[in-house]
Length: 502
Image (cartoon, rainbow, N blue to C red; front, side, top):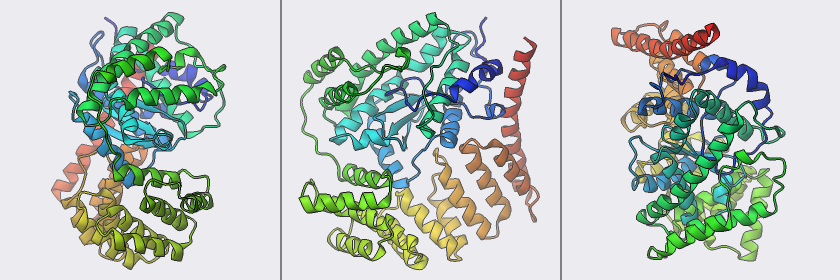
């Protein structure tokens, strides 16, 4: 019987080389998992009973991968951007048959890239959206990656390759996260995997790609998007790669090769479906504009970009261009100009939540916290499902000595069951300021746990059980959570010690 185990020897041998990986996110990479720099913090995912990775193990691998990605990679933490990519991805995921929720997130990276993480996660580089011409193009990539999850492509590859697959996967994905966080990391090859396994992985991936294209196009159409967007986006990738020096990149890392044959096959499949004319949503254009500012080299560059766009008239929607200008003005600390731009936008578009949130964010930047509170309240009343509005009003209430009200709002309309570390951070701030130290420490521990900082999580729980006036319920709750985290770490230590003995 072959046991899939975490392998400390593997990490010790290859971690120095992994840290030298190129800043290449493995072009629309299929395989995903991550490794933190502190090996002891990786929980064991268990014995796979020979060659089958259970859904529970897959979920654990995915959760650990996301915690490490959040700690190592430049994950965009703007709630509006997150809400958009989750909403768009959710339309695709709703058409798929998967036994786990699928969570979508975005990486601040200019490369055109997306990837699927076992356990129900899909990451998207900001460069993919900024290089798209339509919402359907972005949706086509999400559909492709969702199929990698629903067909369990990565998991099947792990099972097929045997014992070394799980540690190799975790190491590979740790390298991906590090490369994403440090684009200047240099260039090196990942070595230590047998040549036969490398070649098998290539062949398996190519088969997966065909399946992901075929099923993904159908998902795209079923979700109401233009199926022709997939081959059109493939063609864009092919043109982009034509001018890229790939001579130093090992071929087995190129998991999503874009060829004329692949484009032709995707086009043929898309043509068999009814062609639909789909207009990109306002949210797509607004998110595009916000990402343009968030990813600019400096605020002045962002402001000047939109000033030039407005002068030339080279825009699809003037209000969206003005929104981008306002964000650029605010980022450059031109508060009066930004305030005037947003006031005009809100006057003409009173129900557009993005403009109101931008106005509230502006007042926070300018130090007008009380006014920002009022603006966030209005935004929250207009869009009670907006996390950006919720977190904004809770944060400003906490800062203006209304922490108990902030706590009540967060707990009543929170997202604590979702994979969102920020929820616990905002809640923790409110609870501590409201004098609820034990609850605040507990929430802060949850925040640290979800970003992969286990030691800090345990420290917060230790402080929580030292708080005054603990109820019996609070005491038991804290102890139970400490045991859960300790059990995860103990399982890993046990596997590590067993590997040392062998």
